[in-house]
Image 1 (cartoon, helix red, strand yellow):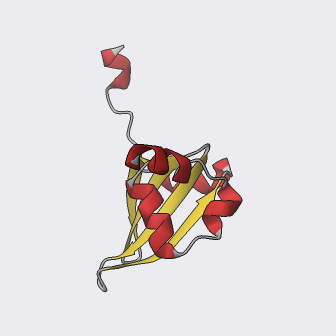
Image 2 (cartoon, helix red, strand yellow):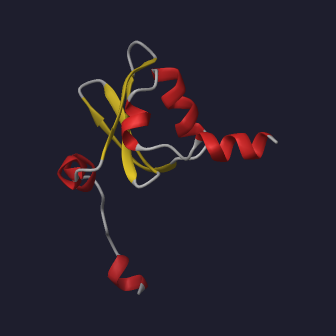
Image 3 (cartoon, helix red, strand yellow):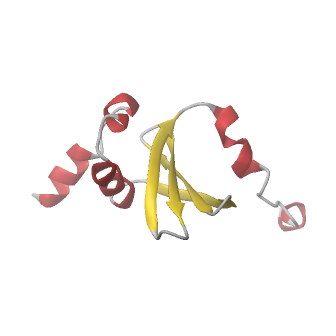
Length: 95
């Protein structure tokens, strides 16, 4: 029964997600989103997730030990800060 409820709850659109409270957004992140990357910026750890065909940023304020903001988006342009920090290193050597 709980698995069915979780599956139903995770099947929401980006507009529905953006209308949720911060606590509700966090619940969906922990129960269905895929963590992709993190960057550190101006005292924040900005965590990037993928969920239901959109991306989500979770802005964690390090000094205050709290989540300040969670936003969902589809724009690839907003991924730039994350992509700049991904090192492909020796990937070609592994192929």
